[in-house]
Image (cartoon, rainbow, N blue to C red; front, side, top):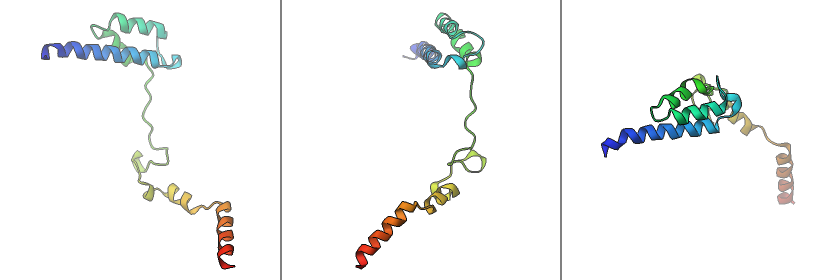
Length: 111
């Protein structure tokens, strides 16, 4: 069973690279047209030259989102909702329609 492991790993990387090339938008492909990268990955996949070339130079890699979202705290770490000031502020902000509904309910119970 272990003698098949290298072949299966090469096959998995080859398939992953091929699918990644196909799913990548044309504007994110670098250095060569997308069709050329498909042929490179297919032709040189058995020796991992094509997939490695694709992963290293073929695709524009984006940095992970740093901490600009509402769930990010100091240093880009995740913040629980009860510690997030923006979330707590949104709970304090009441909708004017809700206030009117509360007044109507109060008037109905008093009379």
